[in-house]
Length: 410
Image (tube, rainbow, N blue to C red; front, side, top):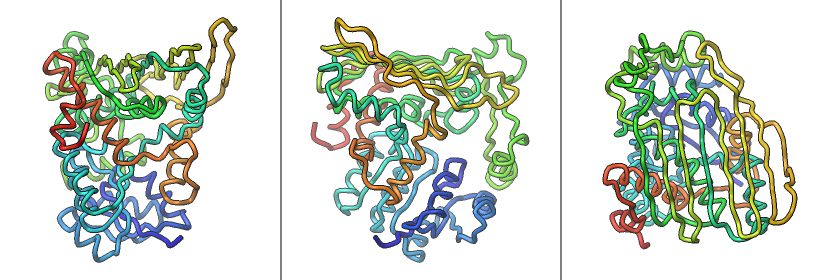
């Protein structure tokens, strides 16, 4: 296989994962950076010990041609994904984009149209699919361990370190991120779609800003932001953000109790899938601990996954994120069986490393279909967009309604 030349656009924290993998891969070459902040591009070169050429966003298409780019890796803020994905496709490049694929109907329409017209590929970095525990769930369900699936219960807890971080950064403005239902829950909606082998059909949601934001800060009688992040305590965050503030004015550590927070922190979603199963989902962004629980009820039994990623967040020092997972299977009229009880790997439960190996061509395609294409990105996005519309309208939203607006067949 020929070595493919890659460019990364968006040099924030997440880009480091791709940059290191590309620099180490025998089948890929990191050929260019693109970011509006020179400091961040310089820092990534220092970390890698390289002199990768850097370009400003205004010169994005110039970069693609001059550096003979084959693949673009998009790590920019969510609301800009469509802009770079479409430009890369039209320049003849394949694309790997961080989730979500985009944040709105118009972005989805543009990406899908460009993909059809160019014949190039779009892959979405849904790393949770590659987590070995999630792969085991997929194997069991696909193998009929509990028969036909009737319902899924999925509860995700973000603690007051991780959860609060979405309210410090650009994500706090729904215009930038689509809110947590698009940015964060997109991971979870994709997992359910993949586990079930089914797409969403109808979505209903309830949610509110309960803990963070100006009014809630006053209600908690919180003096200032006790969840403030010490950027200077982390060499990585200091280099990427504190030292780069003077160039673009972006403040990485904003007040989670400020009045300009426009996303929700407590969300419930019901999703009926086309295969008939119903998902009951909840996201809680201010928990004292971090983890998640998923339970599948089937015609022949029940499968339960319980993941505890940490026991508490003090707000004073980093809490180890190496959690533990327990997967239990119980068939009807039979005792329960512990399928696995193990420590989680690093990087999204060990998913990051496996995902990168496949995306960069350093591993064979996964037999379980872990690779996520444009359609997987679309289906996860549709659940989040339908849920956001339901929050506003108070009604159940048909996914076909959104597909019609995008111009895709139901």
